[in-house]
Image (cartoon, rainbow, N blue to C red; front, side, top):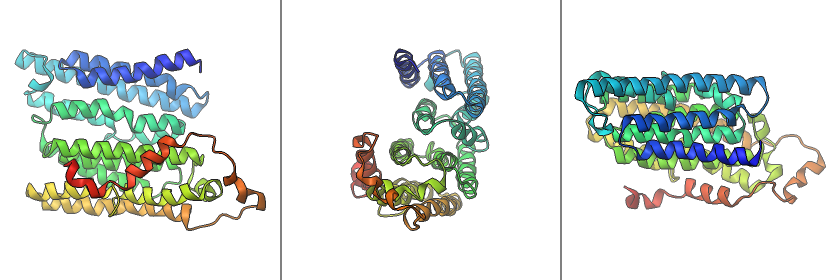
Amino acid sequence: MNPIMTSIIISSLALGTMITMSSTHWLLAWIGLEMNTLAIIPIIAKQHHPRATEATTKYFLIQAAASATVLFSSTINAWSTGTWDITQLTDPIACIMLTMALSMKLGLAPLHFWLPEVLQGSSLKTALIIATWQKLAPMALLYLTHHTLNTTILLTMGLISTITGGWGGLNQTQTRKIMAYSSIAHLGWMATVLTLSPNLMLLNLALYLMMTLSTFLLLMFSSSKTIKDLTTSWTISPTTTALMLLLLMSMAGLPPLTGFMPKWLILQDLTAHSLPLTATLMALSALLSLFFYLRMTYVTTLTMSPTTAQNKFKWRFQPKLKTMLLTTATVTSTMLLPITPALI
């Protein structure tokens, strides 16, 4: 793609999210969401491949439908209350419609079917943008309206998402689809705690973005599109292979790694709000996710692919990618648990 076009598209993508995050008027928030969607369309479609075209079409249809529903819910609210202020969302029908629209934008179950397909049809770099940056604008709107949203609906959708995210990833061999289901499960954890403790949701979102960024950067570093590709990652860099093990365990939420922190705090919060059954089901659904992370870990670090002699010296070459961001993100994604009290 032309560098000028790339810079225009990326800045439009960033600007759309910024507009939505900083707006107080529904119309401005909707404009931000539309800018964001229209900017990422050429990024997904730039690989001239039927899968990329299909992914772009699916993404566009879903996001356009969700944006229209956001506009519709804000219009209903303005009709009943006479205000377009985002924080004054009081109409119950508008609240439910907004929750559904933003859930569709994020990929929360049962409105998640587009996410694995879109990630599979795009490159690892594009999949990273969809799984991280594209979650910010809808999450900002949910955070702004959290005091009026229906807790029961969010708890139900969150629980379904964590179970779907765990169950869906079990049988996958494609790393992008696994990351999509992982994203659905993490978003489920955020949805359950959104109305109970919004600041905890923000902490979870920040850590999710950090861990997903690190995982995608490691997958890009070893060019791993399937689980089979991960078996040869030790030839490229034995150190990053060891880090992959820690990172995947952190994504699964095992102590003493960073990923344990949000799960621990959310379960504690659910129990404090007298929701022990929800907390138990969430904890059990995390085991489903743990299974496929363990499978990836086993393939990456505990098995050796039959390789030729010259393959074993691949790690002596200079890496093609810059590793500064990768190292920083990986360290923060695995070692933040001891500073939990400072983050709460």
